[in-house]
Structures are given as C-alpha cells and as structure tokens.
Image (cartoon, rainbow, N blue to C red; front, side, top):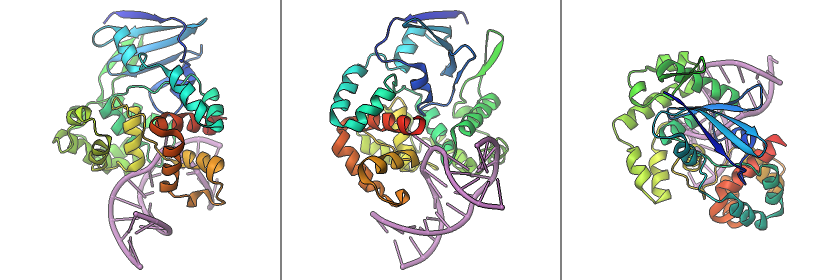
Length: 289
DNA sequence: GTCCAGGGAATCA
DNA sequence: TGATTCCATGGA
C-alpha cells in the first residue's frame, strides 16, 4: 500500500485532543510531537496540526484517504450550527461547549463499537485501550507503516474460534463470556448488523442491541451515538454523566441515588434531539476540567 | 489494604 | 419496575 496525504484546511470545528480524548474512541494515541496516530478499518493515519491546517498522512486500505476521512470524521456535518443551537439552550452547556469546542463525533464501525463498549463496562480507559490492542494484535491483520506495526480490529469471523479462556488470558475479566456470546450471536445473525444499519427506528435498533450479551442501556446508547448508526439524540448515562447532571440540575446529596429516569427526563427537556452531543460536551468538561 | 473505573446480569421485593 | 450484589483487573 502506498502512502497518501490529505490536508484539511482551516476547519471550523476540529481539535485532535477534543476528538480523541473525549472518550468516544480507544485506538488513537498522542505522539511525542503532539500529533495523533490511530487506526480505523484498514487505515493507519497520523494527524498533525500545522498552523490552522491538519495534515493527514498514512496508508489507506480501500478507496482514497480523503473519502475515508470525510466519512469517519463526519466532516459534512456543520458543527458550528449544532453548537450554536445547543449553547442557547443552557448556560452550563454553553460553558462545556466552550471547553470542548473541537469535538466531533466519529462514525466508527458498528461491530468494533459494540465490542469496545462491552469491554468498557466497569472499566477504565487505559485498561480498555490495552485490552483492545491485545485483541487486535492477536486476531487482527497486521499493517506496517514507517517501520511500525499496527493491527486492524478483528472481524467477527476472526474471533469465531476464540475461547472464553483465551479472552480471560487477554485480560478481559468477567467480560470474557459476554464477548464470546455476542460474537456468536452476530455470526449466527441472531442480531443482523446490516439490518440494524438500515433500520431508521432508533427504539427498535436499541431493543435489538439490548439482546446482545454485555449490552445494557448505557452500552447500547454509546453504540447508537458513537458508531456509524449515529443517533445524536440518545443520551448515555454513566457515572460521570450522572455526576455532572446531579451537580448542575438536581443537587441530590447522594449522587448515586439519582435515578436514570430523572436524568433522562431532564436531558430530553433541556437538550432535545441533540442530547447525545450535549452529553458528550458535559462528559468531557466534567471529566477533564 | 481500599477504592474506583464510560455497567450488566442475576436475584429479590 | 426498582434496588442490591457480584463480577476480574490494574492503577491510584
């Protein structure tokens, strides 16, 4: 494969740290020079900021790099309008948007997002990244670029014969059975990913995702929001989101006693059909700031 | 040693 | 429906 390059000139909404550190993805790593290198599908890419421009260089598994970048980084969507709309709704949200103004929600592969967020359950981000790297190194395809080896995220077929015991040895902990069962269900088309992508009904898609082992309400919502299903209205609630929502709007003494239903209700009232993006700004702001 | 992490499943009322 | 408890693992 030949190296390709693409220069994104002076984008309005685009910041490497905001995009890659906001918790939506696990396979991008900051380099010593401040650039980020990552892999999606069969693309290995480094992104470096130069002035107001971003230089993408790397190798592209299929088609051309520009198309892959536009799709993955959702570059046809106008985030300026979205941010303006959201900022008007709420003063705290306005603050959080200012903090994470360069966030874009990626179009990540559905299968990879399902497995990644099953692994995320009751886990921390460094460890999630480690598990995904070991999984990819063991079962994915190797791609070499500039003398370094990278590994694609394994397909369902590539995980077909992996045993629960092997997952345990890779450090998955109690999530071993869940990964095994979900992979099996998808291979047997008990949940058909192609059908999910074609179904416009978010509630129906969510119900199908919930039948997968290891996929509960929060993981299902992350899959809907962060994968190429791209449902910007869903509002995943984890410990950080519960924390920030309680601090700002509920102020209950014991934040762990705040019900999901109450948070969902407030989110829908305040943020409407862009609740997922609101969630991401609030999450990033509360966790980092 | 203790607590926590982008929770889910099983169990019980 | 709603609340409790247990589930591996590694880092702080």
